[in-house]
Amino acid sequence: MIEKFALQADMVIGAVLIPGAEAPKLLTRDIIGRMKKGAVVVDVAIDQGGCFETSKATTHQEPTYLVDEVVHYCVANMPGAVPRTSAIALNNATLPYVISLADNGYKAALENDPDLLNGLNIHQGRITCEAVAGSFGHNYLPAELAIRNKTA
Amino acid sequence: MLIGVPKEIKNHEYRVGLTPTSVRELVARGHRLLVETNAGKGIGMDDNEYVQAGALIAADGKEVFAKSAMVVKVKEPQPDECNRLREGQLLFTYLHLAPDPEQTRLLLDSGVTAIAYETVTGPNGTLPLLAPMSEVAGRLSIQAGAHCLEKAQGGAGVLLGGVPGVAPAKVLVIGGGVVGDNAAGMARGMGADVTILDCSLPRLHITGR
Image 1 (cartoon, each protein chain N blue to C red):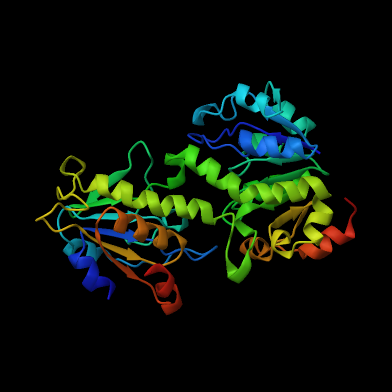
Image 2: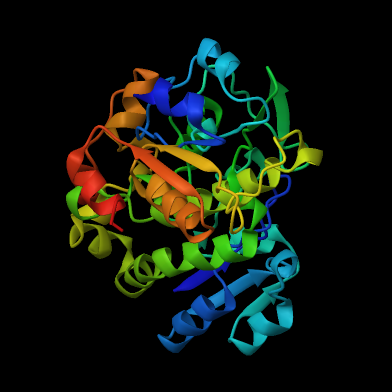
């Protein structure tokens, strides 16, 4: 399916993200080589290693390169191109959590919100996020225990 | 609580942890805000706007880290910033620790309490503090891709939306998550001929609307 549509496409957007894992390679070099000349591929998964076999990270200063006459746009940290929009969008999402942490203190804020507690990665010298600890072969202290054990 | 907002020091990072609008809200709730000078200057949010919102302006990042009970940022702390954090202090920002053992070690050594935007969860397995950046990237991907289709950029010399009598460009979006959904919507809005591929039929029901 991917190959059939990619060979007809003028533009392919790679938008496959698996949280915390390397992105799967969706377009092989072979398929890229048989795409239309002058087609464009945009790899939005580049921060997770990219989802096209021919992707390598580029910058906002030098955003594109060609492979077999297919334009590759693989800019890392794409939202950085529009930082005003990105900062306001980010604040719209973070402000309720900042308010909760500031009003209640982190201990009460985390105790009362399991979703926010999942955000706790490090507390007083201990890793409290299983995925982070796992990637280093570190042991970890579950977040709910970490905030209970010690005082705020 | 004294909340600090340092200017981002990573190369080409112009975003800021708290905008003047956010500062105004927090000040109204009785908190004190300390914002490093020029923290929002790169995106048109100057010190004066922060002062009008009720913030105090700090001369440098050192002062922000030294005085604040909570530091709100955007990017993961750089080594200089990690060294200024301390036990009892709260850091709220993107961390992306998994591929970054050096930052992890520095944060562990500092004793800080660090909450990462990217692992805060929402209903149904969503990531509410990653979603806004995925929305931006998805929408931007079409704008950037359309520019790349221009001849001078190496593209085929094709206008994304076509014109009456000329077919629009064919856009394939692989993945129907937040990024793909936003990309597809933007491509449709620009008049492209859009196909979305995803393994999940429920996702396609949402994205294909």
